[in-house]
Image (cartoon, rainbow, N blue to C red; front, top):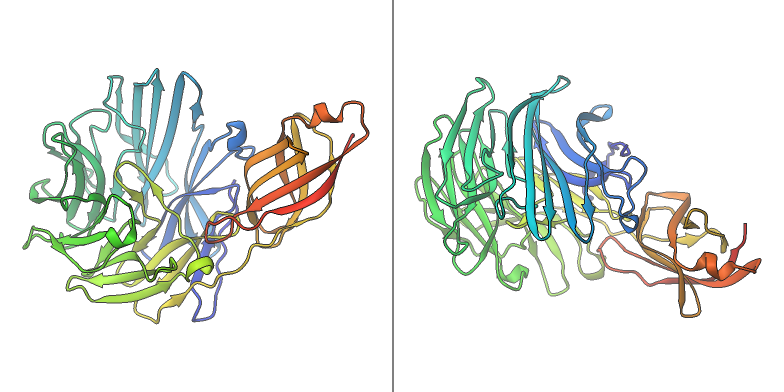
Length: 485
């Protein structure tokens, strides 16, 4: 189980953190603003995740903030991810939430010998605290139909929208009225594929990839009838990354250039009255977009030192800084998980507040909230110290060793134990929450063999950690003693 949410207060000049994930619960989706609460999802492993030993997340939890800290509102267990020489199995979950309902979309793709063997998807919907019912499911086993990315899904207080042909082509947009339970369908162009779906009030917007040369276009539908109101091609020469729609049908779109740099990005908007591209001067980083009350929120780069800010941009191009993330080596990193269509933005905006995720020392994400009408928030950089508690290392047990460390603010990175040029043990990645008595677990490569016939062995310990900018810190190197048990 993931650790809990912490509600805290902070000085006015500092970004207000309202929740935090821990290494046992990796941040998976969100934050999403739902009324006066924040919802998010975490992934984890029943006995702890260890990618170096092919132990991947097998559980998914959806939480929302509450007066008591946090409240779990949905769960999915038994997820399976496996990679070997002949087969690949990837299972994913995503959620949509309203103030009194939650939807879980679970998808599994099994591949063999370079082709999709089978794709299965199921969507469940229900009131909070009550059993969910299946509203959609599909299965396909034809070559090239399915992809490894999770199917698109979005939900607000009135509407649930999804791809009703996510196991095949072309896609078919499904728009479910949550009050009446009626689902309306909107056919898509032949051979097209829905990459993103966004809902707001009476409107549903999609970003779809066409069969002709992989071109992309946006389209906006009226939720109550399923009728298409307008469509427009995505910016030419760029790759559309993300879209969002506000409650009058206006769409904001972020696109990136070939170099994937912030200064090549483009921010555009489209509306029911003016359904053509209106490109603004702002240069967004390719990290997603959210729009409300005629203001789009994006990440922008502020200088050559890699400084970034979270800004809002109105439809006339006027900008306002909401959050400053620091500069250069003291910039705090924010997460971005890219899929085929673009990033999965780890922020949300409702016109009054912006919620966003920032990396902590454990390489997990603290969830923050900023009032959009106030002074810009500052994210303060703090270091991520790590110390060895002992240089004595017990001999391997079940092909595992451990290093005793102290990480007062948490830590993440890689670790190795060597004797000369021979690597005795390693871990490709570790993440520990804040504490003073922790252990980094390593895989035994040659430590047991090197200890044969010896009571002890002098070794070299090397630990390279990652700071809040996602950069490697200087390597901690110490001499140690490997001891027979």
